[in-house]
Amino acid sequence: MSTFWHWYIIVLTVGSLIVTAWFLVWSSKLRVQSTKEEDGSETTGHVWDGDLRELNNPLPRWWLGLFWITIVFSVGYLILYPGLGRWDGVLDWSQEKQYRQEMETAREAFEARFAELAAMDLEQLAVNDRAVEMGRNLYAHNCSTCHGSDARGATGYPNLADDHWIWGSAPQQVYQTILGGRRAAMPAFGEALGEQGVTRTAVYVQQLAGKPVDAAMAAAGRQQYQQVCAACHGAEGKGNPVLGAPDLTAGVYTYGGDLDTIRATIRSGRNGVMPAQEGLIGETRTRLVTAYILSMQDRFAAESADDASAEGQRTEAP
Image 1 (cartoon, one colour):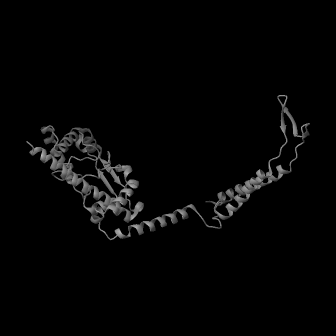
Image 2 (tube, one colour):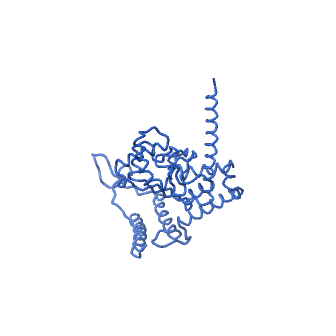
Image 3 (spheres, rainbow, N blue to C red):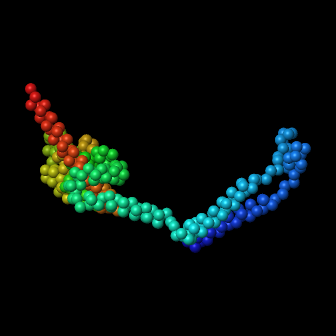
């Protein structure tokens, strides 16, 4: 805060208190001419509508006393707390200091609660009910806005509850994704391929995922895919977790798998950003969120196995 604004606030604040106190003293000594009526009341002599008289009744002393109490309270507050420019107050209190103290208290309480889990690795945390519950709460507060309350994702945000991972599904890979964030960059190839080339390549990408497509167009798109896409996604379209290049054979798409959306992706590119959580929730909480996400992977694997078993039973049934 500059010196000008420092003194501006002081003069304005102190001046307001002085003027208010002076007004109270002045108004308490002010005497208004009054007229004694037959019923013993005093009026100012003003009459409206023939019979509406203005009485001369001063404020009750207790009411006037409240104004003085307010002024005294204001003076005491400005001495103890910040309120006069750069003055920090006798107590040296600030919202920022209080926030830091509360956050430190919360951190110590959390660390004490987490102490028995701290020595566990990520795989152990993922099967620990208490750790998973804590991770679920942290996920709801910090991750659900983008990935959804059920972690199923949305357009532009990956599904965290399946087994398809762009940057790798190993516990340490998931942890690093959350802790340090990720930045994916899909280059735009519209100018290099032309509109026809974009369409052919998109059709070939659909073929990689096993979708029924025009075979001739897919064959034409394969050559262009090998020229501009294979460097990242691989010759067979299996992807590369090191580069964050998705597996195109899985049929799982962050931005959509219909032909128009794939064409838009190839033509204009994509730029996805996963914010780093280290500065927001720290390493300890990141491990718990990782544990929760890993636990969902385990549930997904179990559900997939159950579905496969049920499908097999239906197939074998006469």
